[in-house]
Amino acid sequence: MESKYKRVVLKISGEALAGENKFGLDDPTLQKVALDVKQLYDMDVQVAIVVGGGNFWRGRSSENMDRATADYMGMLATVINALALQDAFERNGLPTRVQTAIEMREIAEPYIRRRAIAELERKQIVIFAAGTGSPFFSTDTTAALRAAEMNAEVILLAKKVDAVYDSDPETNPDAKRYSRVTHTEVLEKDLKVMDSTAAALCRDNKIMIHVFGLSEENGIVRACRGEDIGTLVY
Image 1 (spheres, one colour):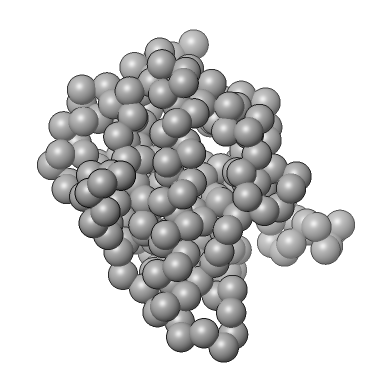
Image 2: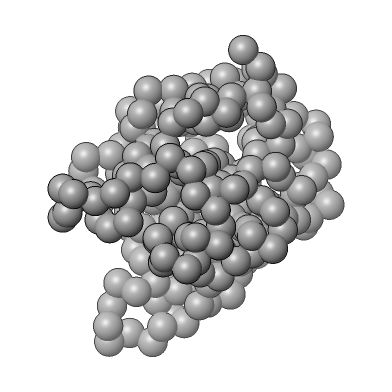
């Protein structure tokens, strides 16, 4: 079965990369992501990835720390995850580039939009790290921004939860699950798919969001094929 999309942005939360450990990196999860992305690569899908850093540090982790400082620390955490993904991908034969919004040339390329597009067209997997390079913006906003810049058709949002709910399903067993929802509903009902800045950016640029659980068997591939898993935000 062919992919529904030609170019996608895959957003992976840092927490999801920790697996059941809830901290750090889980090797089986990294391998699973690599094998799923390899299937997309073999389907000739152009894949850009935005990765979070919540398995190490979140910008809001400390109430006492200066918010901008905490956010910069979170950006560095995303670089750790990006390098781990790059290593897993290359071990599985996938040509991969890491681009960072904060320059660190010894370990990654600086983010340049035209270079990123050229690398995608040359069938490179491109991983975007260090968020937007500015504090006060989440990696969800980074995913929305990069999807718009890359002219991606969809954001594949791989999370710890398997869909969009009207409340936290871990604390509320009666939480309502959505299979399809509009960007406007996400914003009006505050559904926590993404933060409001990211959701509004996707709405304004007509970028679909497919939310699903990273742990789901072949979830990334099934979402890319347009199968009915998780929640589609349209």
